[in-house]
Length: 135
Image (cartoon, rainbow, N blue to C red; front, side):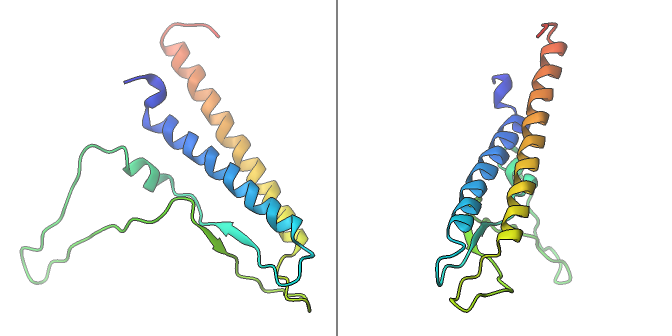
C-alpha cells in the first residue's frame, strides 16, 4: 500500500473535495440572490467518522441473544447530497437567499478548506521526516 493511500490522506482528500463542491453551491446561491423564487442549496455536513469507516477492514456485528438485548445498525447515506436550506428570510419575490449569510458560509468554507490542506501538507512532511527524507 502506498503512503498516499492511507486512510487519513484519503479522508482529507475527500474532505477537500467536499469543500470544493460546497463552494460551487454557495457561489450559485450568491449568483442567484436576486432571482425570483430561487431557494438556496447547501451540502449535508461532512462526517469524518463515516469516511474513515469505509477503510476499516474489520467489522463488528451485534446479535440479540436475549429479548432484552438490542441490535445496533448503521445506515448509509450519500456523502455529497445537496439539500435545500432552511430559509427564514424570504423576499416578496420568493427568494430565500440572504447574501450576508452566504458570504459567512463562503468564508467559513474557505477557512475549513485551508485547514484541511494545511493538515494534509503537515502530514506529508511528518511522513517524509519519518522516512529520513528532507523536503
